[in-house]
Image (cartoon, rainbow, N blue to C red):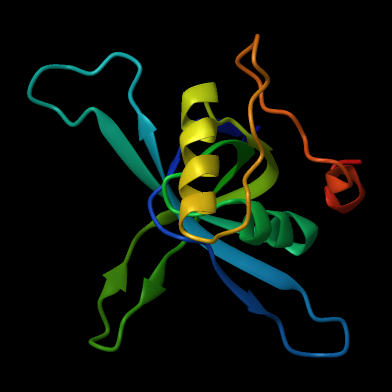
Length: 147
């Protein structure tokens, strides 16, 4: 079984491209920083992973997430090995995204919403006054990939 669950922040804005052909497919690539639960002294307390999402998940990530956004994702680890121009073998891994969810904290969502409005950006989903969950804006459900 190959299954991972990460909660972390995007290290860069998602980079989206579309495949060639009659039925083009969205492909989003982004990085996620995940805090280690029990860091050891002298070791890094954050791990960085390269992620790739396809299709509706890629479009969802492109539309609703940016650098610094907090997300919860599930997926699988895949080898990303290749031979470079010098003939050397390069080894790596990437996370192939299967599901993505919002994981913003109330205070962060409020700050992002006010910052977006101050700079003329699109308003972000805001959090309810009495809990730590974000409200989903009206009409958003129609475009979500997990309906």
